[in-house]
Amino acid sequence: MNKKNPLENHLSVPRLKPYLDVCNGNFAKGLEFYQLNMRLSASFLPLLSILEVSLRNAIDRSLMDFFNTYDWRNNFQELLYEESYKKVLLLEKKYEEQLTKDYKKKELLYSTAEKLKNHHRSLIREEKNILRINIKIRYRKKNNYKKLNDLEKLRYIEQKLEKELQTRHITIPKSQLIATMPFAFWTSLFRDEITRVLKDSLSRIFSEDYIKNMNVYSTLNSIRLFRNRVAHNEPLCFKYKYFNIDKVKKVNMYIGIIIKSLDKDLYNFSKSTFTIHRNMLEINDFIENLPQIINYDDNQLKLF
Image (cartoon, rainbow, N blue to C red; front, side):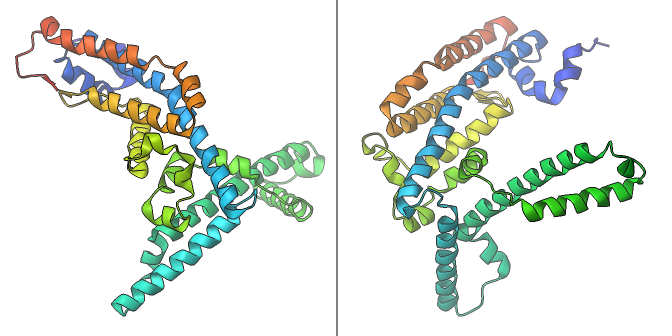
């Protein structure tokens, strides 16, 4: 019985398996490939961060102009609710029947407004939890609190919280909401239905020279899916034994185009973080030399 490598326990067999499969079960080579993939993932993080931060800030500036107000959140939600209601009415008139509540909730304009509202609520809950913890720290050393049982302590803290909330209104700054909204939300704003409602104001954040023939939503969504793989250190350039680094190169190109279309100086700044090409070359060399090292059959590894 082969002795199990301790790294298998720490990294897990299912996580290492795709790399081992590509390397024909060679554990040392599988680990090397895993490390190369980690380095490639890490090299994308600064670039993805620049893209996400600059994109959401550009959207924020555009929506401030569109609604002619610094804090556009309520205007944005009201507009989307209103347009969603109109769309539902038109569909009901067309099909001569009432649409289900489930459909209405899932309708794109409505659900986008709800995502913003729900995220705002979740941030308020977090602030309340922080306040609750601070109240507990403040009162836990007092004798009258120490004498209470666990249930009474909970009630006591909640009473103090409610009292404090009566004199203190929790507000979430727009900057906090923008910084914590997921990339998926910002990406969804470029879907056709939403861009029409916003009268293509968001498309004007980009230079047309770079994105003239590009579907912005589709491009951003492909970057988003790639970003999720990077964040979870999933294999970036192969699936099963099919290796294709061109897909990684294409996403890298898309990210560069989007950043350059936002601002050329931003693109030049982002280039200083690039180690992506070097890491892609390392993986390419690794794969090209792999068949000679581990005696692959000619058709076992598909390079394309």
